[in-house]
Amino acid sequence: MSRRAAVGDVESRITLRFTALVVAVLVSGIAIYVMADTMAAEVRLDATLRLRAERLAQRISRVPGDVGLPAEARIVSTEAVLIAGEQVREITELGPVEGFGYVDAPQGRLRVFAVPLGDGRSLQLLDAARPDVIDTLEIASVLLLVTVMVGAITYLLGLRFSRQALAPVRESMARLERFTADAGHELRTPLASVRASLDVGERTGDWAGAVGRARVELEHASMLVDRLLELARLDPSTLRLERVEWAWLSARVLEACSSMAEERGISVAIEGARGEVSADPILLERLVMNLVGNAIRFADLGSAVTVRFSADAIEVHNLGVPIPPDELARVFEPFYQSDRSRTSEGSGLGLAIVAAIAQAHGWPLDAASTREDGTTFRVHTRFPRRSSRP
Image (cartoon, rainbow, N blue to C red; front, side, top):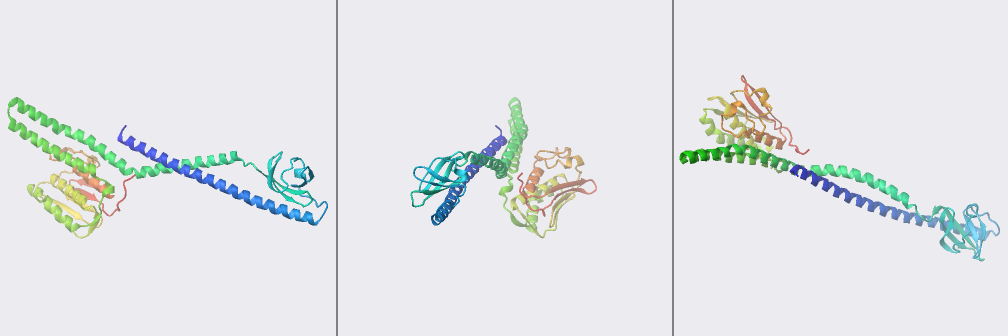
């Protein structure tokens, strides 16, 4: 299973567990609510039934004879039904002579409240609209429908949230995969050269020359690994943003690039060294160093490299062989080297690191190159930092 598939499996498992938890809580809450509401309704209906029965019994006690019973009332003795309203005439079961009880009826068991009349008779009031047995099948169906709908919504939202939460993990996995693939691809050449140099030394006996060539290749491989690790470790979530002053950054650039510029007879000019920017100072320094180093490497001998700092951008400009238009869009890709750069020292990762640092800060990056105007790399620092999560 690939690392990305593993992350996707973790996302699904987290979502399923979250959904199961939410559904369980929801079902429990709905069940408790239904039970509590049913019990409360039963209590309210019983109180209403008692009050109506007691009032009707008082009226019958005050007015002897036929008082005109309601359709759901009847008068019974301990042996038989004496008088019954229209709705309860077919009910033959006597039921209680005092208090609450139930009687069997064609429509189901009915709730009954009986009030003794004092002469061996009892008044019964039946709740013909309320069977004793609650329709549990109907409640279960509604509950199941609600649960399915809530479960589906919870799963979709949970999957989205889990993907957002695991986005840094996915990005780290992607960086690790890129590092593994790039390292395997790029280290193959210097290691093969080391082996070839040692083989030549073994055949010719020129061990000094073989070891010297092998050392050069191993140094190149070591530099390549360092650059790959630097590129793989860039993580937007670990940025330490501070207010970085252009003056401090300018001094660092001049100090680090002076020897390289002197070797090629190139001068480095700093413009607009006032102001500041919110950035990770270490990564910002690396970004500018890589841009200036790249500009020095490909500038015409004896020309100048200009670094401009402004309120909304960092620009690095040089004069030299222009970058073809079809290559401008690819210069920030790892290991991409144009024809003009293949003969120079470099790993093909400098501008890729610049692009990764700019992306981590949420800064757009572009390049322009012509023979007349030279080559300019521009980082737009005014844009606010944004997360790179999908």
